[in-house]
Image 1 (cartoon, rainbow, N blue to C red):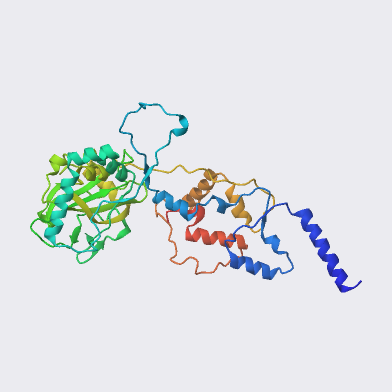
Image 2: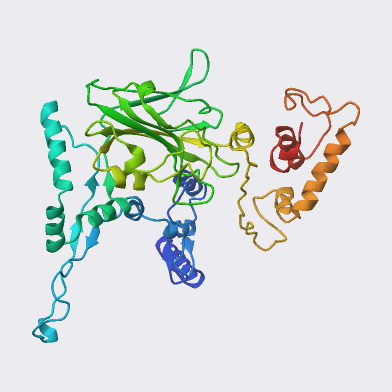
Length: 442
């Protein structure tokens, strides 16, 4: 038999074997480790390339559950609001028409609204900007203009409420806001755009600075809130600091309407978002008690410190505009207990997550590429594992001498006795306090 005929017979037998073994549908799964797969293909060149693919009947892979970039963008940046036109005439027609002549009104698309200051593309003088602000305020408060808009389309106030309430309001920071917490005699803890701190870092009132023209009629308002710190309501915030009617950048001369309260993220609640928001007044000082309502001042009651930035801006949008912000994330530490007990006068809450039990496949007699002690450890009862660790801890602890002396580098000295390889790995975990040995106190 010639070599060519032998090659053709081998190829025919290989194709028949593939058709009989493989399923009718082959789904190539994206390789998470292409370099490793390339090594395996070089190591076993006689294997067919299809052996490195996933073959099954049902179309299902983990990558199909992941959302695309466009879907994730839709979650954080939803589409503009679609507002239907309002019929301001008679509901029932004076002269009825046929069904074919009726039509549905086209919805109007409303884009995002800039609730801050406009971009300084064409710089204008201060007097001109004040005139423009006065003109905008007068136009916004005109009753006849509101009625006209209502007749044509819909109420301006409800439109503004709806756009901001649906997270379609935004602003661009115009000036940098420098926030520094005192850390040591000569050192501070700065606040950037979302850096992570622990509760002991923002325990004292920070130093806040920003650039100002120091004009006679220039006033600011600084608000510090915790977006995730309310213990009872999900859509409410905790007001930690409120300083209004600040002349220029002299925050000490401002009106402190709410004293500083350190953030208190409860244990188990994760990272909390804390925001410093600076507003610039349009027409001098503001009487917050009349326009907004009572503020907590020196009170530490969480009910009085309940705050909503949306409600605050909705009431005072004609008098101020956001100009800049700074925010950070804070997590629990042992200093939170002191805040709850000595400042708030209440017990410290503690939250725990109820995770679903980890799925374990049915136990097999032989498992490849898995150490048998680790494999069997998965199917043991957690109480039995903890009991083993506690017995070992009590065995090594003396009630009179305390904990035993643990060497500083336990893995540096070689083991004199011969032990199998799987036990060597278990000793490494024991000395590093990993796995089930995490609960060892020494």
